[in-house]
Image 1 (tube, rainbow, N blue to C red):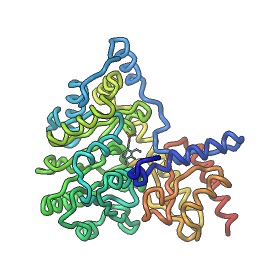
Image 2: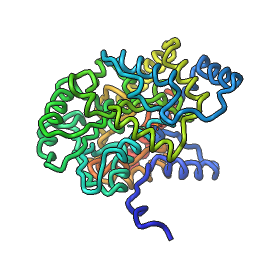
Image 3: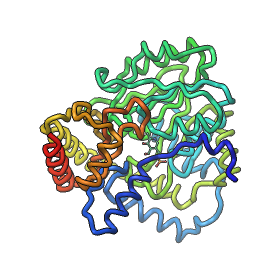
Image 4: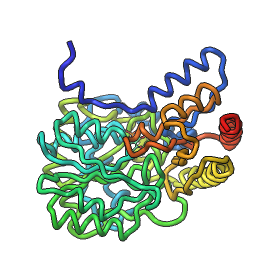
Length: 387
Ligand code: PLP
């Protein structure tokens, strides 16, 4: 019944684990949710108010597929300012969340057989979309010894004359790794030399703990071959609103807007108005949220490292940790299931992010310190019981 191509479509396990965890809760179990990648904070009030005002002002109709001119201009201005470059508003496409930038971006660039290098472990939708289009996925392993940053030597080896696109993500889901300026310069040099495109997923660009976000768009000549993926979901705790945007050279941006016309028509206009208020209004809620994530990061990293058999790097960005569980001797998927069913803590197996995630778990620390402490106690008890 289903189209053959659907067999190539992947998914995001986080949503499946959420369903499993909810089923256990329905049976009366207490589950700590560390599986889903969304801030537990509410959207700042002034953003909510801007949406309500927009609804009252009649922003209840269709809008242009590429986004309201005012939203494109505001997002071009804020994303450009953060990266020290001028972004023309007509290069911005507003989308319902950051995800459509991946989908429409790849549909715009890839032909079947084109090779796409992407991080593994990495956001599972990259591989899913590459496969669905019929392009060839070329996983780039991210290794703990390299703090889960991509290795330029590995990248060089993965490049062939058929390489059309490199996807990279900084700060990174699931490891929290942040690429250095030297990493980004190395990527730029290779992209120019071998003439491939870049999909820079910078959705966590504002969620950093010291250090600086360095964007490939800040380097000369890169805007011409880059699709930037940005959005409001993580920065402004707006996951459920569905608001993101892409920045791309005009022909690619126009094509992405054409895909939007074919699929979602436009992003809800009152949501875009709220998004404008988010980037133009006070930023103190973002700072407060990141400060709190910083404290939780230290809590969870220290707590995990205190459990025998688990070791965990201290990530520089995003709100995930990717602890090494290899010495427990249990495959990641099985251990994640054990942690859920016996420990009452929902997490994701590292393999939910690709084969190179074996030996790791992903915890999201977008949850209260009290819940993180509870989760750590439960994991510790479980692991101690295994010895
Ligand atoms: N890119 C990465 C690396 C993510 O982790 C996510 C969400 O989890 C997205 C993109 C998509 O974000 P959105 O919810 O705005 O579609």
